[in-house]
Image (tube, rainbow, N blue to C red; front, top):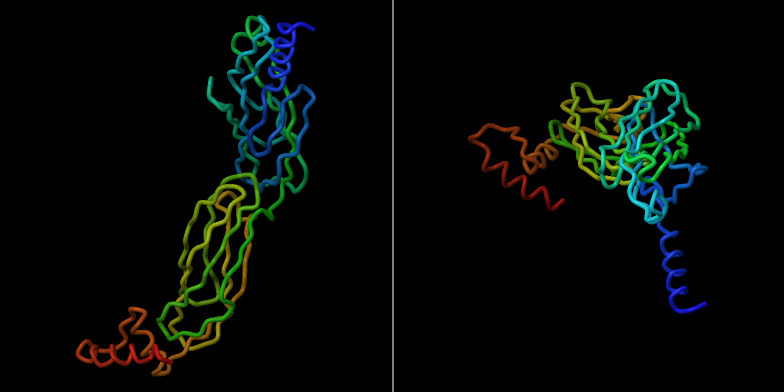
Length: 269
């Protein structure tokens, strides 16, 4: 084989190594018979599949080109989707799971389309992605497991929420177990990541509380995880002194300087 033919052969092999490919949630080269599992998704959530629609070979002139749109060509009953924007790079289709979807494995057919048709890349390419629907796509951890504080004084827990699924989502953090305390926080967590925040609980009455902190998806209440911690609320004088350091004013203004000193001294114990 001459030098010219060798170069052409190398270029041909390189071109063949660049077909259209799935970029996320997983990576895979696309073929008409492709069937891949892309991960877990919760009921009511919306997930996306991104594709690099550029190809180096094929088409009318054998020089490749780019597909112009990605859409869902077959969906399970009750599911919905939004096709990618035309000519986007990458092409991204969004698929929404119904809130009442049962747990299990589902298949979605996706199709790459070239606006030029036979004058471009020719026939559409259809491939299949499989997802597992389940509600256990959120994890939750809370520290510490027990806090003792004064009445009206905030108990601060460190909460870590993990998004285990392939869908980006917003989660609401809240608690139950302390009367008249209904504080909520919302936090956006991309798929496959976690975020940590501080959550405060305030009890006004002396008691031992069993506090359940929870993280619930805004897509569906079925996607929820809880963790139980202990809270002891005291009304003794020492706890009241420490409350001064938390910004809670429990005493008359005329006596504030005195109790400010007591608050500083309480840090020594």
